[in-house]
Image (cartoon, rainbow, N blue to C red; front, side, top):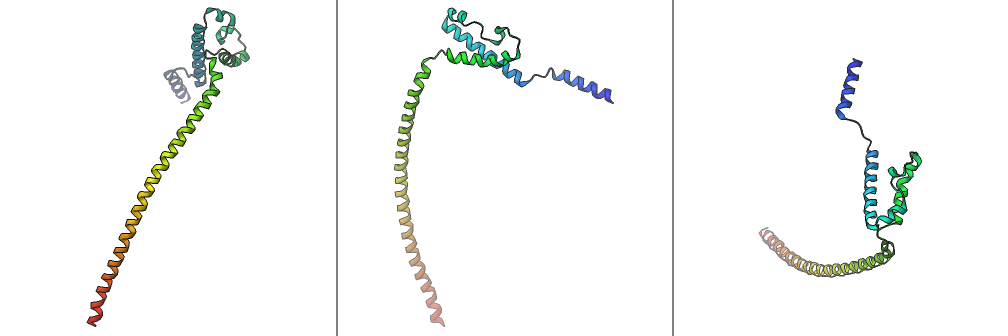
Length: 159
C-alpha cells in the first residue's frame, strides 16, 4: 500500500513538472526588466557612460555572496533614479503638481456652479409641481365634501 502511494506521488510530481517558486519568477522578471531598462539607458547615454559606471547587474557583479545579491537590486534602483534619463522630471514635478491642482480646483468650481444651476432649475420645477398638487388636493377635497353632503342629505330626509 505504501509503495503504491509512493509511486503515485512520484508520478504525480513528474506529471506536474518541476515546481517553480512564484517569488523566483518575480525576481527573474524584475531582473529582466531592469536589464532592459539599463540597455535602453545605455543606448541613450552612449558607449562612454557604460564603461565609466562599471558592472551594475547582479550577474555582472560576480559576487556569489547572498548579501550582495539582496542589495544589488536596491543599488540598481538607486542608480536608475540617480541617472534617470528624465532629469527635468524632478524639477518640473512641483510646478506640474501646482498647475494640476489649480486646474482641478477650477474644474471643481465649474462643476459646482453647473450643479447649483441644475439644482436650482430642479427646485423651481419641484415647487411648481408641489403647488399644482396642493391646488388639485384642495379641489378634490371640496368635491369630496360636496359629495359626502349630497349622499348624507337623502338618507336623512328619507328617515
